[in-house]
Image 1 (cartoon, one colour):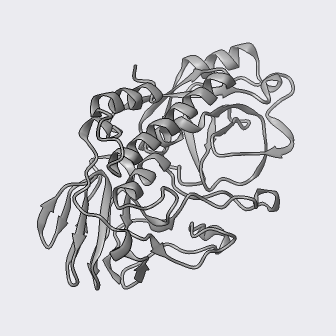
Image 2 (image 1 turned 180 degrees about the horizontal axis):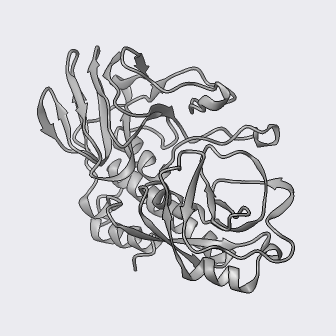
Length: 331
C-alpha cells in the first residue's frame, strides 16, 4: 500500500519493543521516543503500541498505492503532493498521493503512523527492527509496506493542540536519575561531579547508547569494573575513562562497567531527542518520585488519547497542558 521513493536517513519499523527475551540477551528495542510515537498512533486511532515508521533526523518520501489515514509526529515540514500540511495532525491520503517529510528542525527522531499500523512479521513478539541481530533491517528506497485495516480504524482531521506538543529545541536539558546501583565504585567527589557538571552528547551516539563528554567521574579504589550485571535502557555506565555512557533502546542486556545511576523512564524520550552537542545536566530523584512521575506521564498520555478520541472534550487543553508540563519537570 505504500512505496518508499527516497530514504535519506535511518528509517525503521518500531513498536513498543521486544519483552520477555532479555534473559536470552535480546534488547528491548522499540520507540526511542515512546511519548511522540504513542501520540502519533493515537492521532490515527491506533493503540499506542502499534508498529509505525521511525526516522532519524530526515524523513522519507513515499507514494500511497491505496487510501490510508496517516500522521507525522515531529517538528518538521510535511507536504502531500507538494502542498504543505501540519505535523501532529491526521490526514486521509488517496491512491497516488505523494508524501514528503523534511528534516527535523529540533529533536532527533520523528514518527509516521498509519491507521491500522504497519503490517510486518513479528520476530520474538515484536516488529521492532534490531539490525545488529538480524531482527528486521533499515528500510530503503523501493521497499513496499502494507498497513492494517485503515478504512475501519482511520480518522482524519485529528490534531494535537500546540500546548501538548513536546519541545525538543533546547541546547541543554535536565535529565532526572535514580542513583546507583554501584555507588561503592565511585568516590563522593565523583558522584558530586556527576550531579553538578554539564555533559555533552557526542556524535558517537546511536540507538544503542549515548556517549557523553565532560568532567571525569572519579572511581573509588574498587575501580570501574564489576562482575557482569544487567543493563536496562537508561542505565549509566562509567568506564575507566571516567566519562558516562547512557544505555538506550538497543543497548546490550548486560555490562561489566559500574553504573552510577539510571535515567528515569519518563525522561528517556527527552534524552533520546537530544542531538549531539546538547548539554545534559543530571538531577537526582528518589525511586518513589520516579514512580510518581511515570504515573503522571501515563495519566497524561491516557488523557491525550481520550481527548483525541473525543471522550474528554470537557477536559480543557489548558488542563492537559499543565499535566504535560508537570510530568516533564517544567513546572
